[in-house]
Image (cartoon, rainbow, N blue to C red; front, side):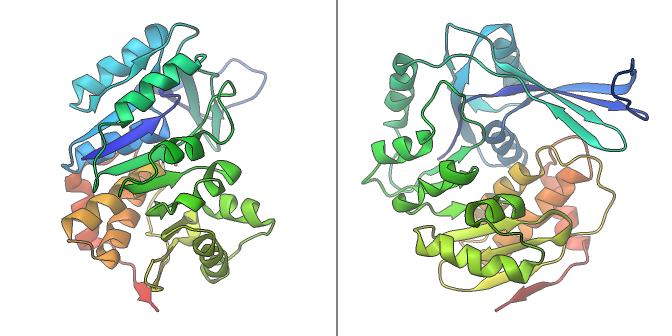
Amino acid sequence: MIYTVTFSPTLDYVVEVDNFQQGAINRTSSEKVYPGGKGVNVSIALKNFGYENTALGFIAGFTGAEIKRLLHGIGVRNNFINVEKGMSRINMKIISKEETAINGQGPEITDEDLGILYARLRCLVDGDYLVLAGHIPDTLPSDMYKQVLQFLEGRSLNVVVDAERELLTDTLQYHPWLIKPNRDELGEIFGVQINTREEAVPYAHKLQEMGARNVLVSMGALGAVLVAEDGTIYSAAAIKGDVVSTVGAGDSMVAGFIAGYLGSDGDMKTAFKAGMCAGAASSFSLVIPDARQVEHMMRTAKFDITVK
């Protein structure tokens, strides 16, 4: 079974504005509302790709109820915990000549709420996949993901972590199966600027030395690099296309990688290709792609994967 954890799910309010101007009244040319948050996006993409999973996390208020309703409408199972204080976030994405985001704060999560999450995590069994992704509210410890993995220590789980800085690096001692920093996040961890896929490789190796098993680095227009547990390096330039929005592209890449890995009986090259195609398909649209779109891109996209 696959589980995702999103500590602060969102309603993503995505609007297109012609020639957005700060300090002026702007009118939308289109607007849509989606359930969001990085783990939730992974759950939606996995469901779209044909893989049942359960989304875990915390919701509150009328926005939380709407997140749950929307997920139910698209068939994504969830076992969210309702908290009392505050409301689930509304994240506004403004798509114009540039992409602008305004993210909400989210509800207050108490120790009692965390206790309920841990109780639900007890149902995980050896071989399950657990995706920890995204924002941690300010009311929670900065090493929250580390605490979750400490609680689960001793179980043979395939853990995926998509997070920033210490939130990611603190988990490495528990040997996550896959981590997915992007180029900027990887550079921030080591205090460097990474300008090419080749420059990303030694820093991905450093993350392996710190405990990660497989390191997938998404690099936007530069493509992506995977440094696999067996030492093999997979690298590819970005798939060409018209980028509409980058919202959810990294999450779709994670879901595509997992789906590609499971669907190919563990072939890393297929997983890497599926991840890249899923991420690209997401960036060429305002919505998370479905299996048909990704399969079409897998067949038709012209890009070469180098293997070393």
